[in-house]
Structure formats: C-alpha cells, structure tokens
Amino acid sequence: MYKYPKLLKAKFIKRYKRFFTDVEINGKILTVHNPNTGSMKKVIKEGRDVLISLSENPKRKLAHTLEAFFVDGEWMLTNTILMNKVAQAAVMDGEIPELGLVTDIRREFTYMDGRIDLLVQCGLGKCLIEVKNVTLFDEEYCMFPDAVTERGRKHLNMLMRSLDEGYTPCMLYMCQISKPFFRPAYEIDPKYAVALKEAVQKGVKVFTMNTVFNEADLTVRLEKGPELKL
Figure (cartoon, rainbow, N blue to C red):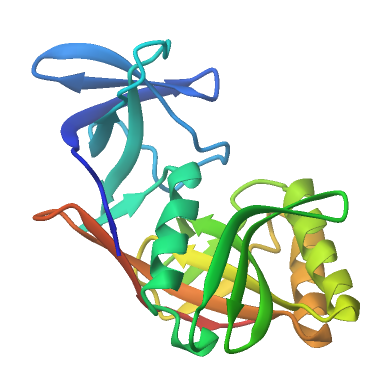
C-alpha cells in the first residue's frame, strides 16, 4: 500500500505544451506539472475535480504536480511516474498474490539496451515487471495505450527476449477505473496489440489490476482487476 503525503483538490481548466496544466484552486489559476505523456483523451475535461500535490523541492519550476482526475465516481490516478512507487509498494505488500513470497525488489533495472521498472525476486523466480498506467476506457473495457507507443513495444520485445535468459517477464497494467475487461487498444496502436498478443503466446505473464485510491486516508492499493481479452 502506498500513501500520499498530502493532496489538494482543484478544478481542471486546460492542458497545454504536454506537461503543463492549468487548474483553479481557491479562486486562483495555478499552473501545475503534468507528468503523463499520453493523450489522456478519456480523462481530460474542463471543470472536473482533480488532485494535486506540492513538491518539497524549492528548485522546481512548477511546485505542484497533477495526480488524479475524478471520473464517473472514481479517482483515476494519472501520475505515471508515481505509479512505479505504487507498484513497488503493492509487490512488497503481497497485493499481487501470483508472485508468491517476495524477498527482494529493485527499481529501474538496467537490462539489455533499456530499463525495466522492477526486478523482483519472488516465488516465480527472477521477475522482470514493466508497469503501465491505464486511463483509456469504454463501457466494458480498460485499454492500453491511449497513444502510439514505440517505447511500449520495445518493453514487450525486451520481456520476450528475457525468457531465454531465465527471467520470468511480466506486464503489470494498473487500471484506473473499474471495468470487466482489459484489452490492447488496437484501434490506436495496432502494432502494440500484435506485440502484446505475441508476448503472451511466448510466455510473458500479464497482471491486470485495479488501482484503488482511498480519499479519506490518501492510500493506494491494488486489487484483482479486469479479465484480459486479446
């Protein structure tokens, strides 16, 4: 379980220059950092409630960070950088039971010509876990990605290659809204959809988890999520 130190509620106004977002808080307009590089097409809407955090780093150009949107009665966490910390806490706390007993964990593991989010020593052996934050959805499905992602395909290829070196490769999709099914967004990035299907066929494990945020105590945990449909 991960716990936010403190969050402030505001109203979303607009996003621009990719990493900049204007929000309204206490009647004033505030520009905050948005670390999510995706389109966020199902999340961004003027007037929606959002949560922002305040950095303790006095040298930051923008002191606040956009953390979450309130969508269809649920808080959707959109800070993709923070999701790696949430995933690490969840793995250590046993929130992904398929991993078995976890004895060691490393973040940002350098592998081949890139990096994998987590290297975990657990009941499945040496697990390479790549974390993806999921904010795209329709009536029945959570979907990933929400924009074409060459980097995402690179991660899938790295995981497939790791099978020959004795690793247990895993994809962890952290779904930010409750839906019965998860699938790759083939209409947005058909190459990613093909790569994910190939990865599963070759033995890459896929965990689809729901991210549950408790506004009362600012905690985040993972629970069993939607069924994978390829």
